Image 1 (tube, rainbow, N blue to C red):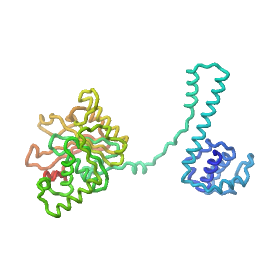
Image 2 (tube, rainbow, N blue to C red):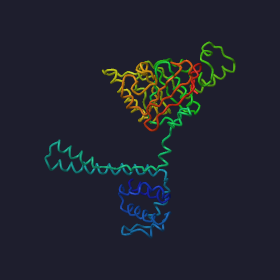
Image 3 (cartoon, one colour):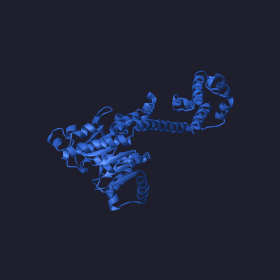
Image 4 (cartoon, helix red, strand yellow):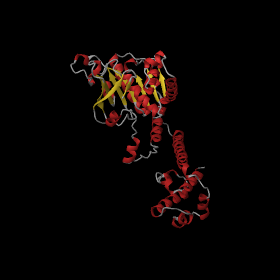
Length: 394
């Protein structure tokens, strides 16, 4: 069987010389010396020519192994599929490992027959020999252009914000924080609505409000119909059609979960199908551990960051602030205002504070988006309008 696999590999290379590019030392797994000679000969030919044929191989081969033209022809006639070359290589490697393992076991069976050895030293020696079997994976060298292409940012939909941060990066933990009733959930729902427009799926854990309340909010954002009108059912025929159409889109692209028994374990490998995860909010997550609240929040933020990296998607977490800002003349939030733990600041890649002047000054209707931390870029402040009746940012 090994000989047949080796011949199929050689046939792949003869059909498509490009298939050898990343596998130039694969002959180390060959058993048949004839096939090793043919493989090395092909490598030499490819240094001079782009294509390989039967006659070129035959006249360039070191023929002390008496490789006949019939044998070479039997390789070419196989008509192997070069797209399956990686599959053939895996099979060869497995066969080689099995052979080495068999030889190790045979060696120690002989030793057991003729020598008295302690079981501990025997098992130790066998383990050492097995650990020496190393088949190194080749490191892929990524070009600068590939690196840029791989870094795919997910736009928030707020042009001013995206100009600074480019968007949310896969693997990032983003904290959205503000004092109560400033618009944290609405801000995240606006980003969620933008993802729906782009036909990108998201997962939204709502631990404070019910699923129905959240859906009504996002419907208001997407349709520009006031929440009060939806609640009171004071709707025109066109508005009802608009709501139904957008409701279908929401059901298709967003999975809202209002689990009161939320655990971090719910964020598993199945969450990989989503482009972004939202959690509303951090201080409502609990671990089944005997920890004080500060240490518990520290552990939660560490796990969330780990999950973001594992799933390679941005996780956006809403967080409360403590009351320190209320005691200051300048009430704009700062990093030390994050509630319960300093490790939130450490684990997160980005911290976005929301600050509404109208909360303190009724004449000012703007909302400030404060970039308190941006691991991969600039910080700063941008201003957006907040349409309270629609819970919409613009």
